Length: 214
Image 1: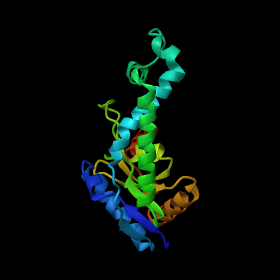
Image 2 (image 1 turned 90 degrees about the horizontal axis):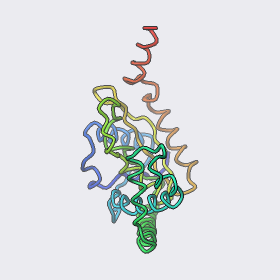
Image 3 (image 1 turned 135 degrees about the horizontal axis):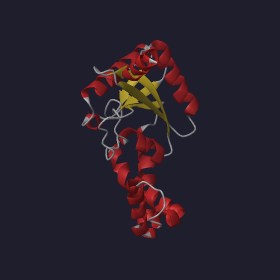
Image 4 (image 1 turned 180 degrees about the vertical axis):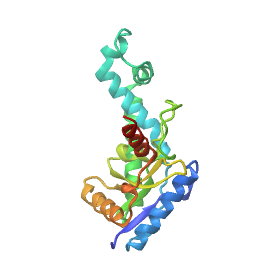
């Protein structure tokens, strides 16, 4: 493969489910066996630090665009969505600009951290896929995906395992902006070396059972 691929900093492993980390570490081993050099980088901020500026920018812009719908209490909008976007009403121009400034700083810092590195590898989410039954709608497992969008990078998620219950996990391949071709190249090499995309999950098993019952 001849590429240098970075792992997440050790601090970012905190809070990630054991089965997700196990699948992630096996993925690193697979790519290493394909000839990639696996390195650890130092990122001077936590990925979750993107949460606040992200929310500030998103809710400010969303409220500016959808103001009439949000303020009309008779409009057919989910109330949890309305509440989130409504917070944009109180965001000042100064707060909006400060959020952009912080994002720009993070973007420069991660660019420096990735000098000489072709891609950053992360779990896609902290947990295995969440089951619909009993789903907690307040839970937003976007720690490893939010910063990719915020910092103008590109990411590709590929299957890399499944839990003891048959719930899938995935590997995220993060590259610099306009490097989609490289992310796809890495993802293709990984998929050709593994068969996770072909293995049935609990969802496919359930679909088959439903089809047989008809």
